[in-house]
Length: 68
Image 1 (cartoon, rainbow, N blue to C red):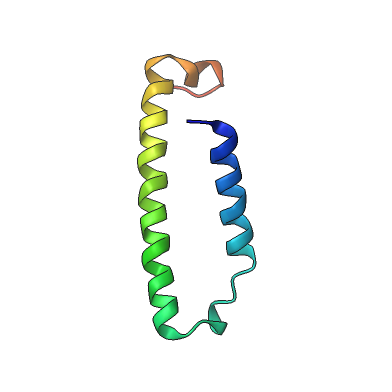
Image 2: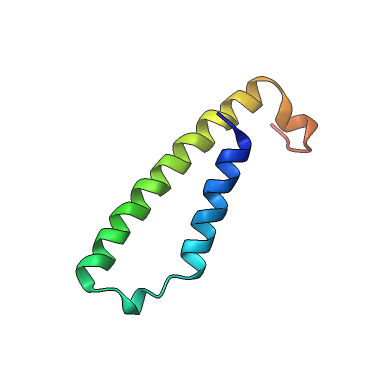
């Protein structure tokens, strides 16, 4: 995995959300967008948990100023 690729994906998502006009979406498209965002939310939570676990096991959280 590349942190640079992950960062670009997050920046792209940021641009999508900042330009999102939900009122311009058809109701069925808005519902589909919710499903896509939920999938993204779950993927982000899983990635965060995996990386947090690794950082914690290595003690990196302490080096970056976070407690136990």
